[in-house]
Image (cartoon, helix red, strand yellow):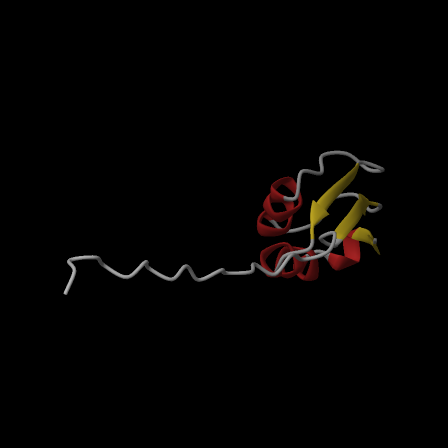
Length: 79
């Protein structure tokens, strides 16, 4: 008997590579005058300040929820 230890087997783990993440293009098309404070803060949280401001954000459930709350003020394009 020898004191040799068998070599540990290596497991290869393949990570799923997701294709290009979805991007949402958001454009503020309506004024924030007359909207609630919560709506104004949501629009600010999305990175929009003035009418015709445009931002591109990753399509996540959190962003989708924010967009849903102020959809009447935005123009949304998925790419």
